[in-house]
Image 1: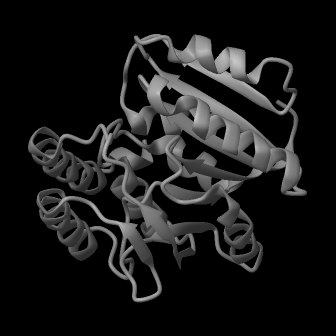
Image 2 (image 1 turned 120 degrees about the vertical axis):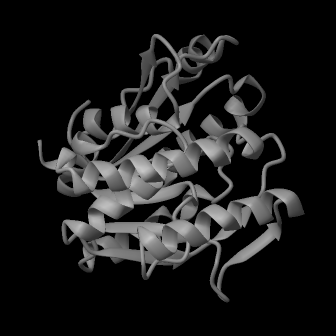
Length: 243
């Protein structure tokens, strides 16, 4: 892919139900946004025909490409793969369900060009809007993880797991080259490192719509994520991120 102002990175895994609507909206954005932008879809070892369908939908597009991972490694690994393969001066990752409308990318870019290294969406301020919220049990368990990460890993931020984040190229390359968490806590790791290494992180309130088909399994993923937080802390204290 040739250098552009913005590369949009979309990790996918078994997304046949949501794929076409999401990609159609993303390609329409490329066609109408007035940006030098491209799209990079990273398939994380799907088994339902997702990568073949992506290839069909992207056929003939010079501004869009697919990376196939042979086995499922986790969303964090897929995002990392995309960030390190991207050629944009700015690199945005978003989910295929577009819970945050892609049209707000311009606002994120403006804040980045004004001096931020990283711009992330937040659902947790008075200006944020969540017209379709998560179920109460998911919201409660997710809040446990959020409070722990905000207190011990990312103080000053309000929402680290919103799937809409923009990175300046140098920040993306440095942070993701050192990341070690492949699954749910990868956001915490990347933002923890960003703050420790002096990158400027800014938040923008977003309109966020919950998708009931989420692949997050809190009963399984929350305990795993808490263990991943311990791994991040140990890796930092032992100098693992500097090797």
